[in-house]
Image (cartoon, rainbow, N blue to C red; front, top):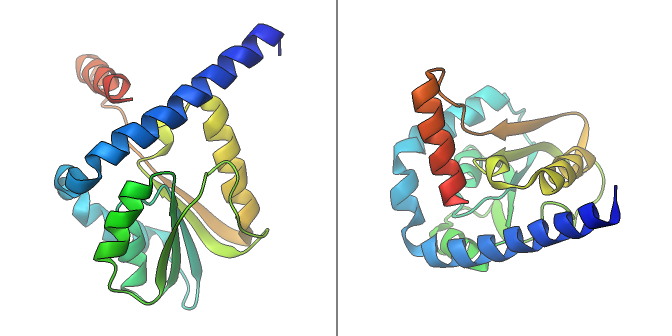
Length: 176
């Protein structure tokens, strides 16, 4: 990597972290209203994951905890992490499960030992990350997932129609 590329990457990462904290600090109180249409998807993700009884789940970018709660209500031990204190405060207020905990953590430097989880999941987070952060986060998710475990990534798929794809892509770029 050329020195100027390193500075550009560092600046991009700083802007990303700053944007995440500002945007989700503002959106946290109303975030669940926006994601209500995806509520049924959370249970489908749990069924798709085919998690074994007694499994330990890590939900990276947990936000207000919707995916974590979908796992927790079936009795799995769930740890949800996110960069946003504000989002985690909402998750903690909503949490009625003794088997779900939440803490602030950076996906690129997870504070967990190697192979500590049976499943590492992230939902609707990866698309917002710059490539350098995305790569680090995915490596960390693999690191904390036991051998033979599952790394599960749930995110948007672009429509096949070129015009619709352009509209969705523009919306995603605008929101980041």
